[in-house]
Length: 486
Image 1 (cartoon, one colour):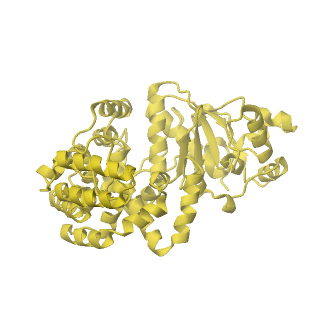
Image 2 (cartoon, one colour):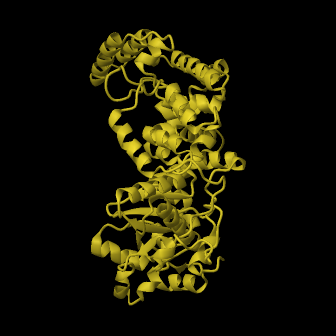
Image 3 (cartoon, one colour):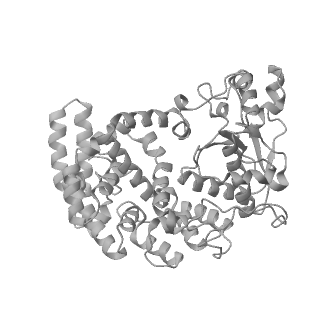
């Protein structure tokens, strides 16, 4: 495996605990309903099909959503910014095309791998010694030497790397370039053509082994043996990765879910990030202004919330009168105080600063119907997975005046565009009944983000959740709290 030779033991133990605490059984209907409150099924609580459960007919949709839902980290962490990283990556397209032809894989996917692994930097290095991941496609020394037939003299490569750094410090650019050429001769990973050819050899091996291109790319980070284990636990052979991923949950295909959770996002979400990188490169070539726009939106916050609701395309409530009008027109609906049904508890302090504005606290205890439906979905799923309730919702809609009061009195509120002032966001307190509940909540958050249904970020005291306008959450969930869907 070019990226990982083994899973770090501590990380495995922690992630395995996450999955083990939540896992129950592998039996579940193919299209389950959104869970109902205990003892309430058939007692006037409407059964609603779960729109985020796996179904084969949704394979393409789920793949597209997962690419969008996992794109934020690429925009946020690309060295020099996503446009610069795309420009560096685009330089290698002729070599990418040649390597993809050798491996018989999609060149766009291979280019996405280059973007993801190195952001187009042929001298990219993972932290630590040169035994670790190096080069355009981040190949480990051991993998390159023993699996891919590469010439890699780690000692010579390390010596030359130190000399390159010294030449650069002294401003001797010509000498640094000569040393780089010398290093590429003793360490093929620093030669872009040879690195891509080696990656093509790996993908050829993996594609022959799994019989599927998507699984070959997944194994580039996860490793062939590890992915074999996931497929074995899933119990259905070499299935499309979108099915293996979305059909594995703490209560369905639990063994496969446990194994995927043990690897962490870097491996389990690797394919979605490759697809996200593909989309970035497509925009770079065909619609660069849109790429620049998205880069700015991703950079605005620590999550993709402004991508879901850009300021210039989203109604925000500036003053209490605007928010009152939204209530009157049912654009905002009340957040219920009925935790037996919702699995959520409304913090009694919600809206406590309203008196400073001479407004009733209830003005700040509501959400857009779609956002409330998502809150109800999260509450229902976390209760069903953990057997415990409620989660505590601390904040819902605000207006600009209320936001100013928060800034004045605690200094922690967002000073720029706050999604709370749109009615699309709510906060859930980071205080849980048990570890089991916390882990169930984490699973639900991560799965919904992977479907681009929400964006979320961890704040000091709360999880801040922003709901996509077209998330797909069923508005019929509102009937459970006696609200007629719009």
